[in-house]
Every structure is written in structure tokens, then in C-alpha cells.
Image 1 (cartoon, one colour):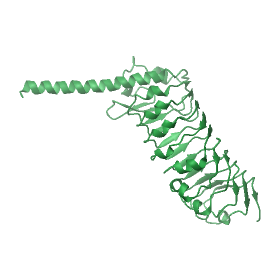
Image 2 (cartoon, one colour; image 1 turned 120 degrees about the vertical axis):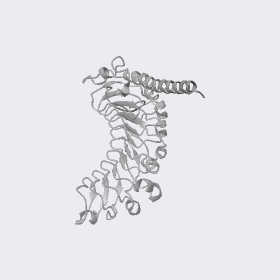
Image 3 (spheres, one colour; image 1 turned 60 degrees about the horizontal axis):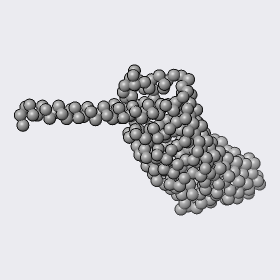
Image 4 (cartoon, helix red, strand yellow; image 1 turned 90 degrees about the vertical axis):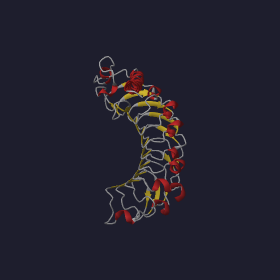
Length: 312
């Protein structure tokens, strides 16, 4: 091949690469601008002014508020708009075209809207925080198809209905927080599905059932759980049996307050890392475990009030 032919091929490849790059950026701009249409209130003037293609055509330029791109500045990988006082009804399907999006953080705003099932097709999502907004409706089952998800926070919203099965698909999940909604489901089933999770907060919902699910059903959760808050729900039945409880060796916080859990407490001597234990306002009875009061205990907070304990 002559020099001219080689140069022609090289130029063609360069133009092709530039075209692909620009097409990807143009595509990301289109989806972001569609998402922007849902932002109706922007008290700090952060988003409505900076997401302006006439001023900054490329969202990867660094001037679009809350938008971060990959190292090549070609693909949007993060949209973080937390705590800006934004309001409006968001259409989550407008983000499905951001094929490289890993982080979506919208916490601490006044957004409303539903999570559409199509959002479950965003396989790249690893971090999803929609907390402290006014989102509503059911949690779509397809959300359990986000296999790369390691952080899921839907707390302090208006989500309602039964929490969908399929959490066992989220093998990378470390944080699962849905507190402060109107969700329900059998906590025993959730225990079986949650695997490798370290932080679980289901408090202030309508979850029901018994936590006394046995070793085989709790083992995947017990091995990793550090924070477990099931307070202010409709739990009943007995407390963890001794064999199951001793598997929670990494547990630091256990809050089961304001339920209808009954029975006697087993020994807590097998939980060396336990710092906070809240069991107030249940139907527990019998004697208080001596291990909770031993000198070597790491406990910093203990609430056993509003039960039927007897003895010294």
C-alpha cells in the first residue's frame, strides 16, 4: 500500500472514531436534556442554567452541574444532584439511554414520579440513591435485575405495595435502605433473599412475619450484616433462636423496636461487635441476658423498655 493509501485509510479511521465519539456525546446530551424537562424548580439555579447545550455543548466539559464522565470524556457515568432543593416530576425512562451510567444520586430534593419498569434495563447502575423525595407507587420488580447494584436507597419517599421478589439476584448489594415508606412483605422471605448485605434498614414500613427463620434461611444475611433495623413494622412471632443469633458475628446495630415480637431472649455472648441494641416496645418476657451487662460488652446503647421482663 502506498503512502497515499495508508494516509487515506488512517484519515478514514480517525474520522470514524471522531464520529462515534461525537455520536455518543450527542446521544448523552439528548437523554440528559429529556431528563432536565422534569426539573421544574431549581432554587439555587444549578441545573437549569448549567445544563444548556448552547453554552456548553458537551456534558463532559465539567460545567454541567452534577454530571461526571469517564476518563475519555465520552460517556456520562454519574449524575449526582443531591441536596439542591430541586422539584418536578421525573421520567426515569429518559435516563435509560445513558449506557455507561453507574451512579444516580437525587437524594434530598422534592422530586416526585414513579420508577418505571424500563429503568430496570440499566445494567450499568451500581449506586442508586433516591432518598428523601416524594417518589411514589410500587417498586418495580425489574429493579432486581440491576445485577451490578451495590447501593440501593429508596428511603423517605411514598413508595407503597409489596416489595418485589428477586433480591437474591443482587449479589453485589451491600446497602439496602427502604425505611420511611409504605412497603410491606414477609421479612422471613426477605431474609432468605438478602445475600452479602451489610446495611439493612426496613424501618417504618408495614413488613410482617417472624424473624425466627432458622439458620439455613438467615445464614447468607447473618455472615455479613453489620446494621439491621426492622423497627416500627408489624413483626410478630419469636425472637432469633440462640443458634441463629450467634451467626451474626459482625453485627454492630440491631433495632427491632416497636413491633410485636414475643418470647425470651437468648444469650448475646456470641456478638462481640454489638454496640446498639434496641428492643423496646415489644412482647418480650423472661429474664434479661446477663451477657448484655458484662464488663467486656461493647454495648453503647441498650433499650429493653416496654416489654415484660422479670427478675433482677
